[in-house]
Image (cartoon, rainbow, N blue to C red; front, side, top):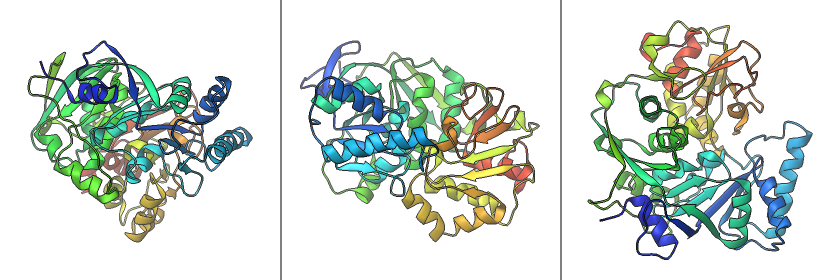
Length: 420
């Protein structure tokens, strides 16, 4: 019996020829990351265990992205702890305000993750990097501390679910719609501590931005990781960001899956997930009477240049609804600069949007767009739990950049075709 791509990566990183689901392994980690929320906790545990030096300063990445630029004294203290640790440990990959982007958009852009690698991060959306054919998963701050000290992480090999996407995508449907539809079908616990192996002809033609979005939200189905087998599109992306070597892996033809889910993409319309769970996915046509107060376009899920281009296409020569606040957040400084060069920034500002420096900000209810009681937001973020973006009595509707932009113009949840 063969192995899945996830099993192959974990076997290779634990010095074994074969691993099976349910087994525990000590895996060598190629990259470990923390942010300004989670890294200070990991640093405290690192020091508490008596560790003096990180195992490999080239394999640690620290990114100030959640509450930066610092929104208050506490966030400033958090960033100072991380900054001083990075300096003392001579961490090679540290990004501070101005240079920092949202970590899960920044690290692939910097060429720090490659096919076949093993990555952990003290952030649940670390699974984003599965889009490159890497095993990537979120861990707690204590696990990050141990990995920084030893270079390894203790993991249970997950079972795998194979999700096969077939058919041509409809207009305005992208990776966000595919993953919202999938979570709506299998539920927020549908892949609990399992791998979502994302495959099929539709994925083969899906750009990297859409793939990052899909793997980013694998955790919203409870998955340990999401992963897409590397192909020609992956190779093109990697060549654009790095010249270093790597060892990709692919699932064997006789690999074992706990189940296979077949999805006909030709039947999928633009989606929106209603409060307060990502699994509450509906075609946008069914929820177009919901008025809104705010729209957020950005985050580690949909803050890439491709997402901003889609939004700008719909916002060009239009104004946002007078009742709506539109906040656009590029994922990285490079994305921000590209948006300026392409004229997208002018489109957003002319439409009446606020254009932010890269930050997680409103996604976690931190800053740059916190909601008041009773307010509703359409957001291209990844979670819509109670109080996620502010007051417990506020509501967040998840959608892709096309639905978000159309909604900003019409002042209610809207299908992009309504602007044509």
